[in-house]
View 1 (cartoon, rainbow, N blue to C red):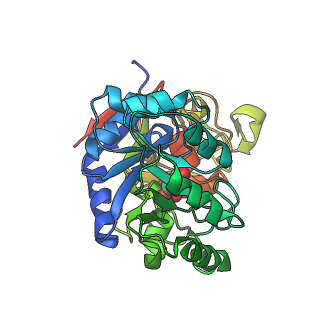
View 2 (cartoon, rainbow, N blue to C red):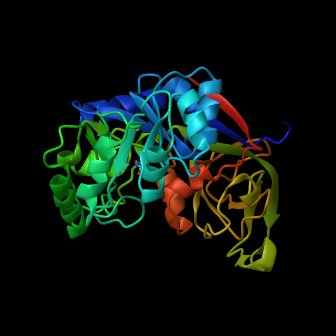
Length: 359
Ligand SMILES: *Cc1c(COP(=O)(O)O)cnc(C)c1O
């Protein structure tokens, strides 16, 4: 690849962050969430690096197939469960565990004959109203689960929190109370916490936790920085300057001529753009590092290029390194400038980029 843009993955940082989850919740097993190509970091790469995880959580069968094809033997949980009855064949073959969250999934388990019972995680909708069995007839559902010959008697109970990234939203306590009532009388393993709850709500730490974002070194909580939580960013998106223009006061930069030079100044062109997953909606002023010095994006992001105010780096030359996010430039900050969340930026890095591993 001749284009000087790449994604650098720091495997030591990934291991460090898993260790941080263990420190924060020492009595809980870890289902490392690696859906969406491990939040853009590379599914198999991340699974191999996080070999100490107790299980992996993925979104779909294709992701689980990739992991098994790469000889990964760790338990794998299909977080959305089967969408069709035929998937049960592969689920048994690949020895997957499944979440079930609706009546259809319970029915297909009741109506087939499997060689061996499956490990099933029964997801309860305690208030987020996305996936999960509703509370009103949950006792009947759990009785059917317990009676189903294709479900191991050691089934597990699960819920997901809608507002764990906020410290004071009353919904979290309502959801926890609902879950507690559902679990009452069931001596089975349970799981509640995503990253935000692992960090912000120790009372949610159950037999299992399900961290995703924090494993990648990113804070799930708006006003808490990753470094203060001792999380290390795993992904660095970097490129190089491929051109420098010395422009005069008043001259415009980029598509739409939306930005004009306030004085005579150097402007750098970076070889990365929205075609690589950099957000087109990043505003002028979005920070970038040129030779480790903070500069800022100016004008609109193009498909393959960005334009940068180089007044903080007047000596910069073609070929100099530019960091768009990662070490010393949290992706959380870029997300704010682009009116989005770090999850979306990480998942959005394009596979056309070269990926390099460190550590
Ligand atoms: C994605 C996901 C998680 C992980 O969430 P983070 O905020 O990335 O920690 C946990 N549980 C379920 C069910 C998920 O879908």
